[in-house]
Image 1 (cartoon, rainbow, N blue to C red):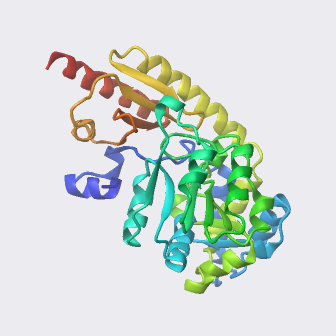
Image 2 (tube, rainbow, N blue to C red; image 1 turned 90 degrees about the horizontal axis):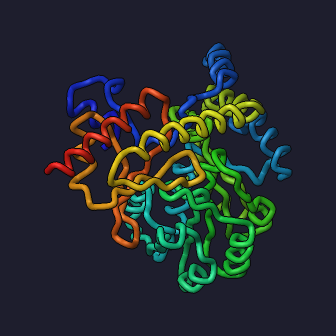
Length: 350
């Protein structure tokens, strides 16, 4: 259930619902992106630039790649959707837990991913040797960095080992960098464009807060990009979306403003939630915290829903239930903290 489904079911406006399943930048799109999109509306009568040449040129110069190594699509999920249709993986390996939107995508393609658990006891870290051992016979390997549920980042040494392991095999390696703007990550762009079976996915939905524009892109070599095109050439990017994306990338101060805002809200929530008995906090280093009740709390999701708050809950390998808590604005964060305190107090008196 997303925010629209829930609001319709309850018969209330979406503005009355707090969505703590959304990983988008709490600052929203930067002012330069909003200005560029408003300006682009004056050219709404023109067809979109099929080459998205200005945005493509900027990314090519920034990443030091050729323009033909870039493929745009309707979000990174849209590109992955086409890749799954092209490859039809019998065995797909992905670090678990999976976010709901990835699980739905795999289900639609009839793919049941082989889970690769990231245990909390190990700091949710990726183990290259263990992952390579599990790779035998895999048609596809999906590595999110940062991981959207645990915040795990694939480091440079880990990525080198994985790239070496899949080179020369039939396994397609997909590095999903959807949340990379919120953390310092190593992006193996050079390896991707020189490989026949590697793809890097990026989106403007989360860090740039342009989810309504449905825009993402892939970096890779010609063979793997042609695999995507063999199913369907992604449709042209909206003129408004391309303008907003380009302006957001050019806004050099946006990353600093976001980092300062997230750090401030993280400190606020850490202070507030640390006063609640019966929970433990885990800082992921990304734009969200993990909240771990020390004892099982009965049906946390439905108890938050009773207060019109959507949350994402998952069970880690050891069986512990965790709430993924994306940082939002101060009023929203305060309401979450107050609600959690009440729910935990109810559990102690039950």
